[in-house]
Image (cartoon, rainbow, N blue to C red; front, side, top):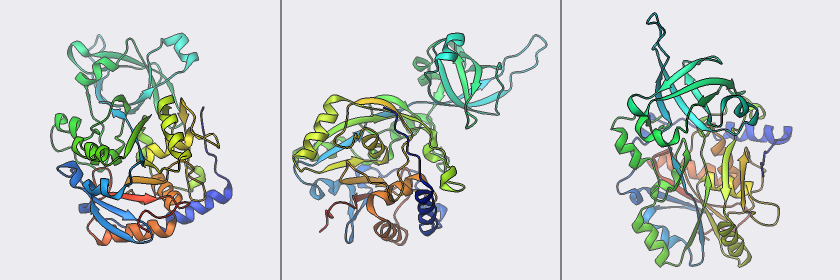
Length: 376
């Protein structure tokens, strides 16, 4: 399964107009630089026919017994690695190159010539095919060669060995560009992960999940709220703004998987009339990518799904999500989900109510535009 959404001219024009209407100026101080402590003391806006304000740990009282929460259990990998060019016999070279590993690639034509350990990566400064790099230092140092290039400028690196076991020692967590790293990488390795992250592979956190704590999960269990997990490895494209016409915006491929157990839990909940609640836009994209028109299918694949206003969101009834950047594909997705009027009302309330924005900021609980409001 490899879903791709190609927008019609009418859909693209609608999306352009939506982003123009939802444009807003955000003072820099409203961009959260640290998460709430404890995590579940962040604010939570309930967006229905009216807007009400809560604390995230109020969530068990806002949901119903039998509701099904669907989490993305992907784990962020230390994908930002400093590399050096090799030094030649004359002592030339050794310059530094910043590497952002994106994901492992399955490219049979290249694997036949360069081996199986292929990754796409952004390099700064860029390097040409044939160039060699040494990533990291000491016993964990790894050699890579540039063997190809993707349409978006990412390079394909061929490693001599599997680099994954070495990333904890040579890499740093890749933080969003609007966050000042400030504190040590060890701090971010704990803080920029969900407490339930299991499957390594993301280069950005599924941030709606950062609000959950073990105590909150236990309280949800006690309230009769059920949960299951899917996986979507979040790519760097999640931070890519829409800088021109939506029709020209390229969605990067991201790997997702839905287990048979998760598909069964979701389909049973839907068949019983119980609500499915997506924790984060990455979970929405996973569920819609696995939707076959009647049910969620187990399986895995790449998705470039592009959800914009006018695109039906079929599976989740509710969505927990943070406050997103203007001019972003995520803002288009939540507008498709909840409707433009409700998103406009929510963002107006957030801007006037001192909500904190973006990855480490506060959250909203949105109702699918096709469903009744949880606040009604």
